[in-house]
Length: 123
Ligand code: HEC
Image 1 (cartoon, rainbow, N blue to C red):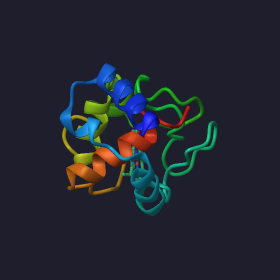
Image 2 (image 1 turned 180 degrees about the vertical axis):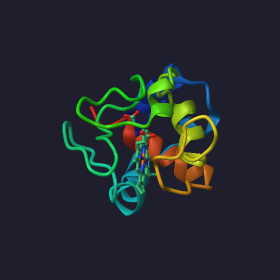
Image 3 (image 1 turned 120 degrees about the vertical axis):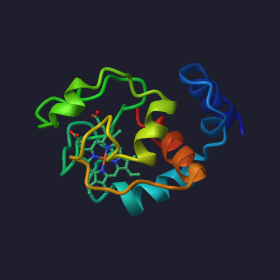
Image 4 (image 1 turned 120 degrees about the horizontal axis):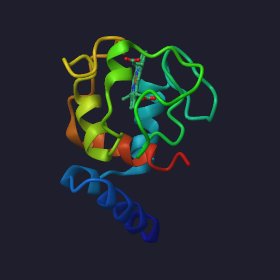
């Protein structure tokens, strides 16, 4: 319980998104392992088809060294707040971020909140 409150406080500091506050990092971990892990590692320095997502929450896009990002991701200057991650995961191939992530996205807002809650534990 304390951990959830601490996590909610962290997410609230990043973005005032109601969805992010509801995120369940345990559920998010299993969604990550089922869907994102095909292309992303949660470990520092381990890139797969996609870049490592270790410590992604709060940092700049396209910041993992030795990963060949798309031009559109390199041009994306908006930090990965909970709200920015939520929007990206909802529609990774939307016009803002280009098309390199060949993943249709997570339509369910609760699942996105859970994944973002899990990503915020990767420190
Ligand atoms: C089919 C492979 C694939 C799947 C599945 C996938 N991704 Fe990605 N992801 C990528 C690729 C490739 C990129 C690099 C995009 C670019 O450079 O435009 C990326 C980029 C990202 C980034 C930006 C990272 C950075 O360093 O700026 C985030 C955040 C992200 N993905 C989150 C997720 C999450 C969360 C999931 C699961 C819900 C997921 N991805 C599922 C392939 C995938």
